[in-house]
Amino acid sequence: MDQTIALQTPLGDFPFSGRYEQTIDEIRELGLDVPSSIVSPTLGIEFHYRLAAGAGIFVNALAGQGTVYSGGIFFAF
Image (cartoon, rainbow, N blue to C red; front, side, top):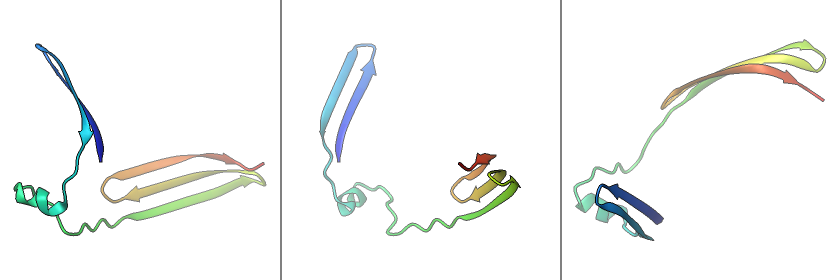
């Protein structure tokens, strides 16, 4: 993974660019907890209501790692 880091301090800026090359095993040897697998279930629902032949409204909700709600108006051309 290529990386660019810019550390800003009162003494000045210290930029660093380079390549970060470590395996998962090497990261675990540093004492960092890296799970072997991640399960992230999500649940979503979407509702469309047609107001006319080419227009309508929609609402959707998604729950998972975070919760997202959205809605709006749609037009078909």
